[in-house]
Image (cartoon, rainbow, N blue to C red):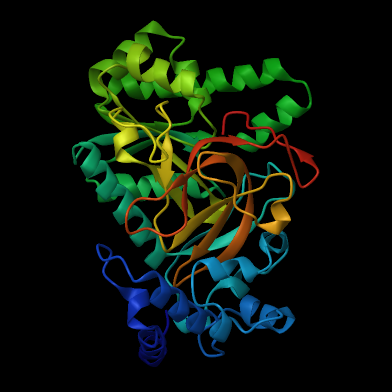
Length: 391
């Protein structure tokens, strides 16, 4: 255990952060003030991470002087490809001192090659899950319900995130572990029967929990929901017990979403998240579209599923998919490729080109950047065929 002097030094280093980086979770910072403070934190020799302090020498601008707004984050290179090899300790800001409160090291799904790694500190996990729990309150999902997550754990962040959301919302979480990398490997090798057998194995485990426990919230992926819906007895169990279904990890078509909401699980609130490891979490579905009472803000007639990121910490832009390197935004209502930036006290991952296409939608009042709707993966990313599988 660190001695008292070390702990005092850690507290002193943490206290050096600009106040806007440590606002209470229910207060949204001014975006420009926040970005400028984050640049000072991440690029000051005393507080920045070894990775970014070394990387700054190769930049053709000074982040502390030249990055003033969310839009300016587009000047950064996309460094996420480097996260396959970077020592993860080099990603932790020095300002946290020698004893940072580390939730874990998490990896991407490996859809586009060797997994990328990030670190998640407690400060960000608490901020993320506070916001997502508040969204559940708005949706009318009662506190104190128990959860069942059919989702990856291990090196994947989603299991840890959902467990923290369940705990913050007053519930106990049951887990059925999923290995999405194995399913993708089977599909890529043409071993579809083995992939189906593995999914049946997941359904059997979930069924045992649903039959024996009072599950009030179900979290899983669209492919798993479709497999559960093949079993009439499981449909009845979900209708009887579950108040809310949180889905994410793979895309859901508008037809599937409508079918699940209106015919398969009527009366159960279906609620989507869009996220990944490089985002360090997820963007939540706009409450109006989750409730099925309103369409997207761009005025389109169809009831799209719109995702609003937690700005200014996570921001989206939607750019020309034919020339994503230009970062030229598409018009509102048009489809483009998603670019994500994560800026928090504990992590900096700006200007990250995602493997997803989405419709560009104006964000809610008071937010910065875009919201996204009708998200689906690109066919090829980084010269790799994109296989979703079950996640």
